[in-house]
Length: 600
Image (tube, rainbow, N blue to C red):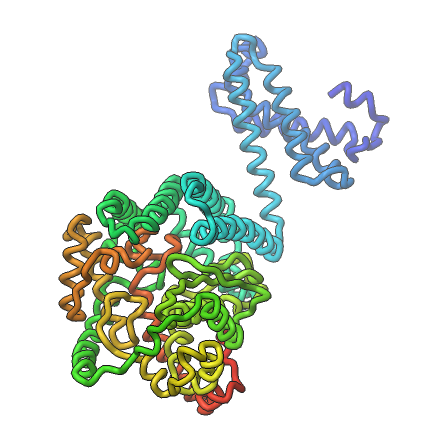
């Protein structure tokens, strides 16, 4: 203190604005505070006991050093020499080093290191909290969106790898692709469950009602997704994604070979992983509830079962009544149609409906899907059978329905959970609406059939539009879900849903799945598949690591298809009620029905 006094003229302030007299008064006040805070056995001890007390009082001496050093910290920040938090960390580091040097030589080196490390972390955390506390809600929201954007980009990068795996990747890339995909999914998950992101949500929630509606919705949805995600370990995410990739690549070869035995180990592991996933959300009413809620929030096994019971009660008599009538002739669909011509016509119709090729593309795959990498990159895939024109055509329009839904999302939502579909059921409503409600309607083909006849003059030139219309709407029990008509389609879904529940509950063993499938097909549709290729191996979902489905498994649950069917009919009925001329405008080609994304 004497040295401090010598550097000041009487009553003159130093560079920190403090006179020697003020400094002495402040130091005396601090010493009184420290004495008052000390335990009784420490108060008034003589200097002779200082060495003995050094270790016990080190924390209080550190506090004194930090408080005195705080003057320089404030001065550095006020003169804009460095950010306040950075100045605080620098000063406190110096204080810590000073305290460590003053420790007794008898103290072990590791103790000094431990003090330094612990104190540094604590001070950094407090400095960060002071900075965050001073942030406005706008700055906090901007930080949240920045973090979400990085997570979105990691997820999109993983989707690019998945798209390539299903379209162009050579067989030799299987092992590496599984490793790469699981790494990206794990990194995205780790960033999303970062406690720092949770603290941002905590700070925004109290004032969310004062923010614009879009931002308030974002906070609500991010909170919902965050609370779900923190229950799932990052290690599980990596394991599940790596397994899904390996299982998918095994299925690609097992299905054409009709080799269900090769898929048994993969399916058993998938089942174990899905049960493990459900355990993260225990307690639940049914083991499938967490997966169903992931896909369609608020839905449960019980609600799906009630929905299916109502549909079953109406559909089965309807199917029997229709099948008692003479069947429609669909021979015109089963002629030879060139692959390139099919792809070209399907893509032409999709673009006329509204699919933007400046922001998308079409490729072939084993099982059609739509994927989104960004607002400006939404891709669709299809598959072609040269002996049936309906396969590629309606698969393309189905996936285009998904893509138009995503392309219709407000670009301002990109990089956040608001930048995608509300739920898988709603998503399916858009694809099923375009594929079935619109593209199988008579007005639609009154406009497009002449172009189809010109494309396939030899095959369809002499086939009237009425015959073609009846052929594409033929109702009959079929083996393949994706080929099923609108009346029998939901029966396919019910069978798969029931088998999933039995597998998850442990009432059905994986090795017994083919037999259970054949029995269910006979009970629901009156047909029995002659092999596993057209039986339990036909759908990719279970073999991509998804039993029960859900957003985070990146594969839709079968129940969402049925929900989408119901919603598609309701949406179109509401649209026609509001605009009665829609059908006639479709027939004239004068109207493009635009889908827009319902926001959370």
